[in-house]
Image 1: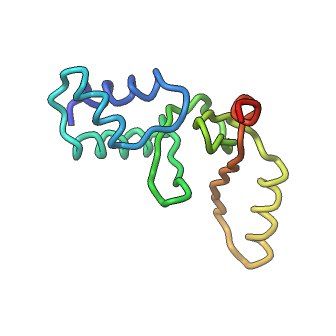
Image 2: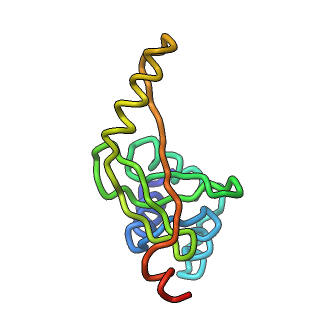
Length: 127
């Protein structure tokens, strides 16, 4: 895949605040006149995810959504169910728990992903 196409996908994610689906990214690129295909978008997202440049999470219905990673440190996400606003948060208690539960069961090289969903203050106030 050309770097220009990966850069275009990266730029779409950098310009938005919340998580976006591959189909949303594809639609934005096509609306801007890009000839990129949906398969190329998925490949770019996989490459960006593998390199740690984008965060990936699964929505309640199982769809993968993507967001430009704002930090290189391990982190978790607090995500608004209404507007998609996302805050990167540290979770030292989660880190200790994951290591302890892994050790308790004889597991090593523990990794984990934690996403916390709720309603942000602005969306709650708008109700």
